[in-house]
Image (cartoon, rainbow, N blue to C red; front, side, top):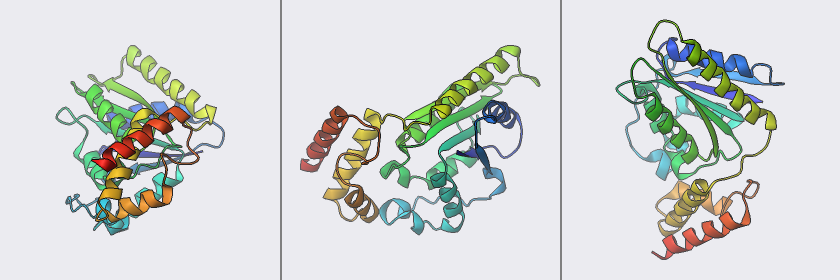
Length: 244
């Protein structure tokens, strides 16, 4: 099992410590492998909002030489862990810049087989809103099962209460990974998939989206874990938007 970790801090501080406490709980999962991407060491250029990744394809990103390496690691993983310290009540600029480079995944979600964990730490407040944001990002990328760890780290040492909380949440995530199942796709994933499918069929200038949905087609991915009711609702969403 391959687990890619997107560490959104420029240093190895409180968030790094919480991450490693969580990883300690996961290490005895058979055949698990960790690949840690420290965004602070990559020096990824700032996203310029050119929309190339959305309209023409992710390989047309002006920073594709760096991003392709990161995208390939994510594609090859079964698990995504995303971390960030809280800066000004939100995720770090490093992580936000990476997420901006992945904007095409909001249009073309494809990570329905993966599971995710998000971790945020703060010396003050904002840890819950930061984890909520990261969780929503992964869900819009297609991941339906996302766990979270949000920690207020207000002293040099973690409190016993915080330590117990981190370990308990990591163990919950561990149980999810041991299941080895494909998570059931939720309504959010089905609706967004069909909304983008309909919009791209109405606007062929969205070249990458149009080609993507032409290949995948229908109401959702063929090998996803999704029930018939959600498929019916997905098709209805597609028809309503397409007509509009």
